[in-house]
Image (cartoon, rainbow, N blue to C red):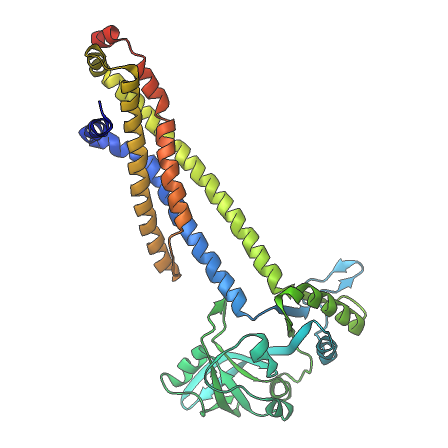
Length: 398
């Protein structure tokens, strides 16, 4: 029997028992669909989080107050006194740091016309727009003169602008923050969200204005520092640690390295890939066992057919090939349908999560090849049993 006829006969046998074939395919379909969907969602989520971390700025160090100790017991992150402007000056002298931006935030009630809206009021220096890679969709950022004179000007985020002005251009408009008039001089480009924080829901004003008008404190709650290059990130962190230690006399700060965050994210992603690979392996193993089980049933049901074929001259190799082709086809069909089902599931989940999802092509190809391989491997034993049947005993089988 030639190859084409073998495949045709195998397809005829599979289509002759559609319910059994579907039940055989289920395990393989679910396994492959799980791999394709989860790997695609995992990749999309990783890309989204990576983009958000990179959107925080380039070569960024984030310095926050660290923990203090009392009687040898840590009081927790953020329990130390706030950072100071002396720390900012110390960091500005480090050769591996290109720019430094002290930053503080508070909540404020903003009024524009008849609209009242509460949002985050963020105070910083003009360097913040460079260090945090904050683009503008309209207007301009405040400058050093406005910072030094504590000018009542602000740059508004898109969410805040939409809530206060709707579709109107916010630049040039006047808003009242806690009863103080501010002129909006610029609008931020869309920043997106970082975790639960909406970066578009804020108004950025000069740090001196924030201190004089709202907080009364001259200590920033966070300091952002930009390294001169990606290669200098480690050196910049070491210099920052040394400068802050010399300025404060103790380690009461925490430095978060953007490169470390990305490296950690890649490690988490790799662990997730390994976990999904393990789940896929178990699913495909279950699917393979299902194929072997059904193929053994098929051999028993077709014992007289096998005996007749052997009596008419079919060799052991031909019978072995026939059953291997059938099990391989089951694996192939299960893989193809599973990939389509996985792509559909990934698209639906992407819409629910509001995350653009692209198929992970490597997972598609690996799932496809592995499904055929599993079908062939778990079909070997049933095919071997069929090929070893004696024609006389097979024809006598009831």
